[in-house]
Image (cartoon, rainbow, N blue to C red):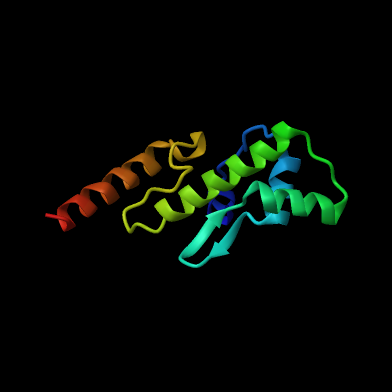
Length: 115
């Protein structure tokens, strides 16, 4: 973000009308440890969180929290691969020509390294 600010690139974030749900997710988890690494937050943990905090979630909210946890875990595991692209690689502020050329060069060099 600091680099974009130095370069005068305006970064606009997408609308997130349910930002409070992201806050709930990070208050609960966003994942839980298990014997072999991390696991998504289960409905049991969501229920315990509700009891402990006094929040009462609608069923769609509990289901959404579980799905957000699954997505977070999936992306965090995908991101451990050395050639994984950032999930925001297609963001409009990265689609400036200089950034596109840099990304193309990086991919080409990675492909050459894998030969």
